[in-house]
Length: 362
Image (cartoon, rainbow, N blue to C red; front, side):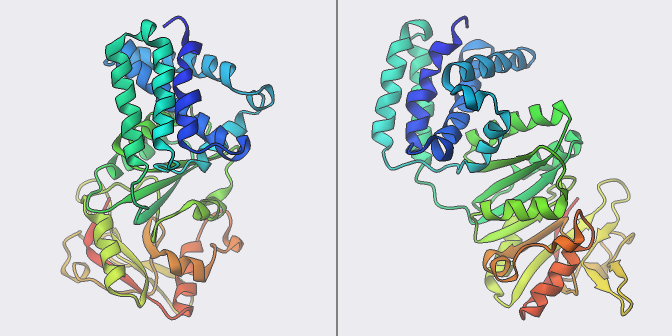
């Protein structure tokens, strides 16, 4: 399309108002970020080359440049980090109750450019915005999954896309880009966030200009977690069963005296041996991974039991326990044993920890 700036009406008058704009820095910038993502992706998907992924990158890159040049004030265009961090303030799906007024604005905007798009394309895009409005009343997520990443997109990609198949529970993703430099990761995240949007899975992205470490990165992500249960997951963990999160959360709901629960972690290559089935700590302070190197179906580790500790590769807490215990201890910055320390702090509050053998993750 030759005049992408004209099409910016879609999100300037539509999506931004759906979020209830009051202050540019707090609401309108995140709305514009979200709207720009939606509009650019939809225009490519519906109008330009829906099956031509080679052209998609060029088109979306051009859309970014021209759309922002049209919408953003000079001082914000000069500060790309403010735009990236605005994504962290997105609360998807979270729209103001003024949905009808917003949709009216979208209809007006589409009417202005209908001659360029055609009636069919206009109707399809309007339907997309109406779908967004319907999702605005979706209930709060039951669980929040926090994932940190630093480059290594292939590992991260497998992790993130496996999460999309999670079933039986409303959940959101809180993603932390910990100073990545790989273009592949940044491009891949952009596509993944759009995929979450179209599937109705709330997803937020926190972006740091440098690697702040796992401890600080997770601490920074915690305030954005809205679920009643909070999961930490490493970006090289892959979902093995779609019901994994439902089972872990159900255990915590049924057993209020437990402050954390973790699955059986299995190496993803043959012969599929156990990496960790909970942890034991020796009197001298040595941390041992239970079952490490044993076959995944070893009878001893096919039984759920209380454990001394769990590791943060995959662990779920009730949110009220996290609030009571507080942040991860920065004494362990950037990473190493902060999860073991956190488990002991949970136990100091009177809670127990559980290894759940029938939930397996790679």
